[in-house]
Length: 282
Image (cartoon, rainbow, N blue to C red):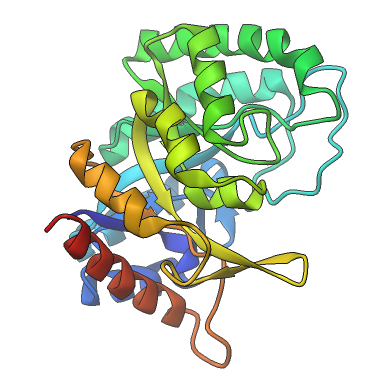
């Protein structure tokens, strides 16, 4: 059972967060922002520190949570407020120029999972769908040249927001170098039922897994501990075990325990996730 977490969801201080992870058996890290700075913007010295701290704690990197293609298509405005986790706002061309650096970091940190998105969503997804497909082509050519895949996360603020949209886009792109990161919680944020419908669509392309949960309260969605929300994680985890998923289950909680230290949500979430995975695999 491989349990991981976004390090910036454990503690705002990277070194402290890694210590918490080690103490509680969370041995896989997804790197996104480090001490408030997006991974893509770290200096050479800061990257050396990240590598040293990971090695000192015996923690492996499961994925790079890069912001690639969390940007608008040319000529389209960004109309949705969405978090970039410290990443700078950039154009498509600037994201393309950043890709070799992403692949170099993935090589350095020993992971094959380089996250990407599917561009900021706007009012007419159908109109721009062909352009989204076309824009992935050069990126995937570059990925193939460097010997990597791009793994696209379903994100409701982007064109591939749920499992069926991810499936449609990956099939239309038609490259073996584009795979899927499945985030059932993001599907719930999009007001869709993640499992079984959208999992069935994304399953053929699955490369990596994020775990968050939420519930709707008075018309508003609020994040909560995995297993306490409206995502059918009991069924989802049983299906993943049956289907032979052997990757990392990466926690991305998006909440804090009221009145408790920052790491409390990570500790309780990892405990709950481990218990649920044990039952699912029995």
